[in-house]
Image (cartoon, rainbow, N blue to C red; front, side):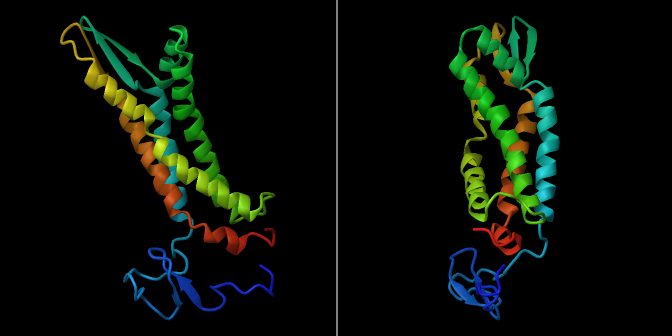
Amino acid sequence: MRADVITARNAGLVGCTICGKVWNRAQDRCPRCHARLISRSPHGLGPVWAWLTAGVLLYIPANIWPMLITRTLGREEPSTILGGVVELVQHGSYGIAFIVFFASIVIPVAKFASIALLALAVRADVRLSKTRLTHLYEVVEFIGRWSMIDIFVVAILAALVRLGFLASLAPGPAAGCFALSVAFTMLSARAFDTRLIWDRIGDSK
């Protein structure tokens, strides 16, 4: 941080994270919305790494265990995420296969890598600018709401395909792991304070 740049923090000010109003750091609570005023989280990056680690660990069984269990005439056929993608391709449903693969494999892995990069960036020198890192965080936050597409598909299929003894679909144990992995990743992103990017990374814009 250049010496000639005066930040709100250096000027003794703090912005409310709820309503956005800026107050003197001597204030304990925001007079407007009564939220607690805090310049930076006292826990630092600890919650970010904790939630991210939990999300990664749960993502492993989410891809190993069955996501969907098909019961036909009393016979069960479990299907993993990748197995379902392969079956869709074999049946010629390339568009749906791409959507499932992109939403279930590409996006989660990209989110893990992006959050880890953001957390590492505030501790180490990286070549990405502060602006690009901030935009990366915004992208991670935006796509978080679309990460549950697999769970929605499984729930809809399980509700629609109910033919008694002949055929039925049920969510497998991977569905719960995948949902928790997505939730923990979203919590990890929310725990990250983007102000740390501007506090600790060089002088680049």
